[in-house]
Amino acid sequence: MMKRIKVLVAKPGLDGHDRGAKVVSMALRDAGMEVIYTGLRQSPAEVVKAALQEDVDVIGLSILSGAHMKICERILSLMKDAGISDKPVFVGGIIPEDDAQELKKAGIFQVFGPGTPLKDIVSSIKEIYEAQRTV
Amino acid sequence: MKLKGLYSSQLDVSKALTEIENDRTKADRIINSMPEREYFVIGVTGSPGSGKSTLTDYLASLSAENSRTAVVAIDPSSPFTGGAFLGDRIRMKRSTRDERVFVRSMASRGNVGGLSPSIYDTVEFLGRSGFDNIFVETVGAGQSETDIENLADLVILVLAPGLGDDVQTMKAGIMEIGDVFVVNKMDIAGASQLAARVKAILEMSGKSIPVLLTNSISGAGIEELHTVIGDSLVDLQKTGKIEEMRNRRTLYHKLNSVYQIIKEDFAESVKLEGLLRYLLEKSGRLSN
Image 1 (cartoon, helix red, strand yellow):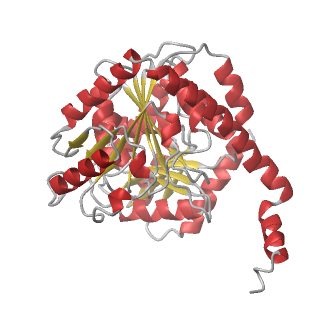
Image 2 (cartoon, each protein chain N blue to C red):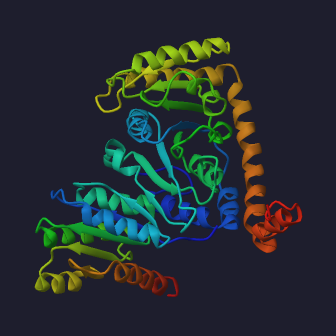
């Protein structure tokens, strides 16, 4: 059976705006990926547990609450504890440019702001997946 | 959370499951390297939106009180792109927050019977890894997705009111496979009437199968269902019928392996669709 790119799309934190997460999930599905959507209001621990149990290739976080710095820090740290810090993490949402730079320094692979074309997200995920496989 | 056996942590289990799902040869090697072990497979099937995931979630967390419990939840792959949207975790708030329950989502990857190509390997691996109760939730089943019957020791068929009259409950296929029938969403009008109709139909075919009413959100009827499942599993052991089920699972595991080889290797090498088109043309049906 052919391996497919498996992506976790998660909504950590308390904002209830899941349109973006759903639109991205559908785009990834239509690009032939297997997408696991966690649903709303997940704690960082739940997100990491899902990534661990599902053994996904990529983690996508959708955050529109403004709490992205704290949430990402917590998730990255829990991922380290769980032994899965090798999985690339993407963040989508309303993220100020300065924060986006900080997040990338902290270990977030890519930050997608509003208006990012879906095909860019798809190709970005495919690229990192291929790059990791050839290591 | 530590699991006994060769694969001692959730991360190891998880990584092995990925290998098993994607590579038949590795799957054989991994499984054969582990000692055989007894475990139960509880299948949960029913139409899309009947409440399978929420119910499975509830049952799995009850099961985890005294047994090591895993959930495998299958959702459909797109026949067009091969992609999948796996949304069962959304409904599994109890299990996904419970350290004791291992939840894994799988895409059906072109299988049509309600399961996924590697489900037998997956279940056998989980059993040998130390899980006692393995819940398998099928894709939302229509009328003829009955493969779970060959995999599970016990099948729970989940129905919900509002999906048709009593003629629907008389049709062949899925209505023939449940060992326990559940009418979920018992708070919705028509639930008790549906339960009565199902009971009547089952009596007509001379089967004594429990029919229970549940509400998987409020939890009404779930404890009772949990007890019925536990009793049924004990009965299977007492009567020795569990051996039959396990032998059947082993047989279907082998048959499935052969089937997957034919589907992937053979179909690819001869371009099955091309062959079918050729035969259609020969038979003159394409031109008509």
